Image 1 (cartoon, rainbow, N blue to C red):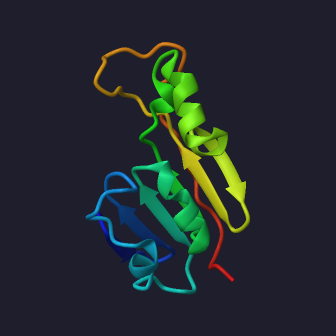
Image 2: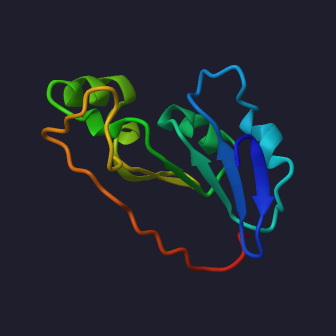
Length: 131
């Protein structure tokens, strides 16, 4: 799914690889040009730093991780400062776009998780075509 749009019967799935500053990432506007304009757009993005671009392109929903919600103290504070409260963890909505940032179940480099929860998120999508 990296750097492409897949049209299902009811929605467009757009996959983004790696980090927002990765030179191999195709601009979201270009990826979404292959989407059906009458169906919602769900962006699967590794990095929440891509959320502002998704908002600009009017994606309906962005699912991402990467932050591990800080993984352990004091990284929890650093991560919240670096990404901001709305781009660190949880469910948020601004304008047309909603996003969910999961802390995930694993870890980065150091095999420890203290002060943050592992999580698996169940998402149930309902509704019809986008206006």
